[in-house]
Image (cartoon, rainbow over all chains, first blue to last red; front, side, top):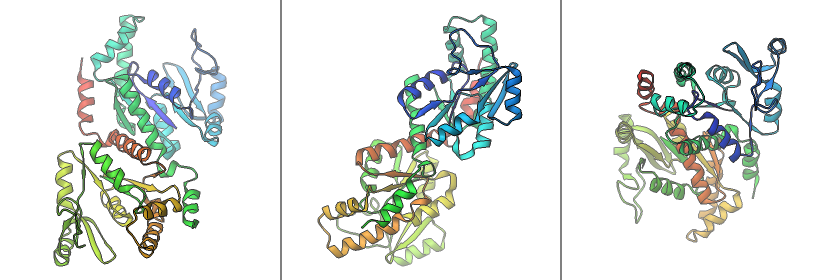
Length: 201
Length: 201
C-alpha cells in the first residue's frame, strides 16, 4: 500500500496519474464518499458515491481500513477492495490526506509506505493554484490555509520529496516504489527461491 | 551507511565499483586487516594493512564499528574514518560479510541500509567462479562452501536483489540508495525547509 499525500497544488494528482500509467501492477484505491458527485466524475472510478446512512453502517461494520471527515463530507477506504487486490499480488496507490495516512500506517504497519510531496515554496504553491484560473481569491485563501495545515503533518511520512519539477518528482517517487518492492520482507517467493538455491547441486 | 554483501561471484565487487563511479557522494569504507597484502593491492585504498598486536589494541580501545575474523585473518571498520565522513555529509559503502553487516546494523541501527545480492542459481555462481580461470577445483569447492554459508544469512538484510544481469542489478541497487536518501529521517535540513515554508507569506 503506497500512500501519496501533498497539499493541493503540490503535484499529487499528476504524479499519481503518471505512476498508474507507468506501472501495470499498481491500482488506485477508490474511496467511498458521501460528498456529492461533481460533473465529470465517474461513480466507481473517481469515488464510490454513497449516502450518509450507508457510510455510517459501513463504519459500524468496521468495513473501512481508514476513514475521515473533511468539511462535513466523509471519505473511507473499503477493506474488502484492498484485501482482494493484495491477495492477487497487486499494489495499491492511496491518494489520501494526513488523517487517512496516519490511520492506515497505524493499522497496516509494515505493509504501508507513505510519501509526502512538498512544494518548493509557498509562493510557488499559490502561483500553481492561481494559474488554474478557476477560483476566487477567497477560495484560494481557503486552499492555502488547508495547504499549510496539511504541510504541518509532513513529519508523519516515511519519505518526503520536494516537487521542484514534476517529471523529476515522478521519477523520485517511482524509485521509492521500486526500492520498497526490493525489501526482503515484501518479496513473496524469496524464501522458496533461497531454499531452491541451497538445495541445488 | 550502505552495506552491500553477497557470496563471492554474485557481483558485489562490480556493483560496488559502478556505484562509486556513479555517485560522487558515496565513499568506500576501507577496512583494517591483518591479512597479508596481495600483489596489486594498495595500502590505504584496498585495505589498511596492520599487524595482529595493533589490531588487538584497536579492539581493546573499541576503535572498530565492527570487526570479524575470517579464516584466521582479522578485518575491522575503524570508527574514526566513518564518523568524520558522516559529519561531512558523505555516505559510506561497506563491502563486508554477514558478520560485519549484523554488527553494524545492531550498532548503528537506522543509519544503516543493507543489501544482499543473490546469484540466479548455484550453477551460475559456480560457472562465474570457474570462468575466472585462476583457481583449482579444490579452491572453487572451498569458495562454493563459503558462498552457501554466506547465502544462508540472506534474511538479515533489508533488501535482496537477484543478480541475473549485472547492469540491471546495479540499477536496482542504485534505486535503493536513491530512495533511502529520500527518507524523511535521513534528509538533513528538511525541518528548516518546512519551517521556512510555514513562515513564508
